[in-house]
Each structure stands twice: as structure tokens, then as C-alpha cells.
Amino acid sequence: MAKTTNFFDPAQFTEMFKSYDMTKFFPTAQAPQVDPSALMEAQKKNMDTLIEANQKAAEGYKALFEKQVKVFETTMTEARKHATAFDASDMSPDAAQKQTEFAKAAFEKALNNMTVLAEEAQKANTDAYKVVSARIEDSVKELQAMASKFTA
Image 1 (tube, rainbow, N blue to C red):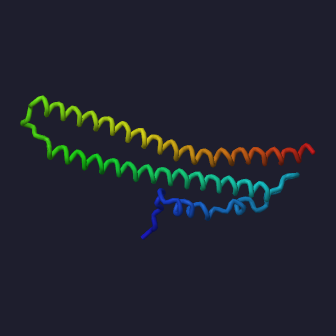
Image 2: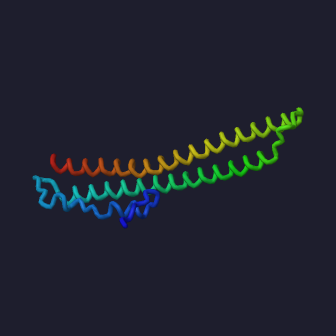
Image 3: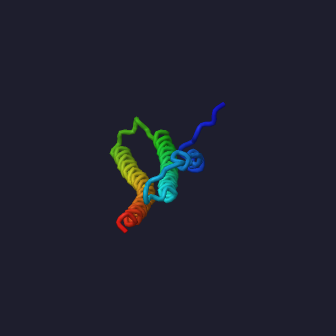
């Protein structure tokens, strides 16, 4: 049976990219005043950065998914409790007030949960973006250093 990759498992996701050796694609890359090993090293750093960014995103989304499951389970437990305690034959103002308070509390809790989950998703994206952004800055500096050799 073929092994499937769990994209929420950062270790398995990383293993998927480790087999790619960029130096094998361009074994004889030669250009005047261009250091092919430096180019390959830069590309390796880029791939490593993408792997790290994907790990951070996967870890963040895994945590987000786990929170969503927990929120769902908690919500369903509370709904079951409320449904068993609900007396449809009681039409008194007190019962209506209790129903209104329960609905208001459930709505506020749902809004709070959505806010927390949205913040978690944003954090996962921000963590991955920071990794890629830092690598882009380094890559620009590396390219500038290489370009300065052409003008020197």
C-alpha cells in the first residue's frame, strides 16, 4: 500500500522536499563571472526557507484545526445540555427571558470563538510570511553582492 503524505504533519511535509537536490539539475552551469555554486547555495537557501515557511504554516493550521474541533465539541455539548433542559410547554415570561439570555450568550461566545480562530489563522500566515520575507531580503542582498562583482 502506498504511503500517503499528511500535509498537516510538518516532519512528513519536510521529508517530501528533502529529496530535491537542485545541483543535479544544472551540473555544468557555467557563465562568465558567475559562481554557480553560489547560485546553487542561494537556491538551496530559498528552498529551505520555503520548507520552513510551510512547516510554520502547517503547524499553525494544525493548531487552528484542533481548536476548531474543540470549539465544535464544546458547542455541541452545551447545545445538548440546553436541549434536554428546554421545556417547550413553558411559555412563561421567565422561560422566554432564559431562552433570550441563552441565545445571547451563545451568540457572543460564537463571535468570540470566530475572532480567536481568525487570529490563529492570521498568526499562522504571519509566521510563514516573516520567514519568507527575511529570505527575500537576504536574497536581494546576495544578488546585489553578485551584481557588484560584474561592475568591479
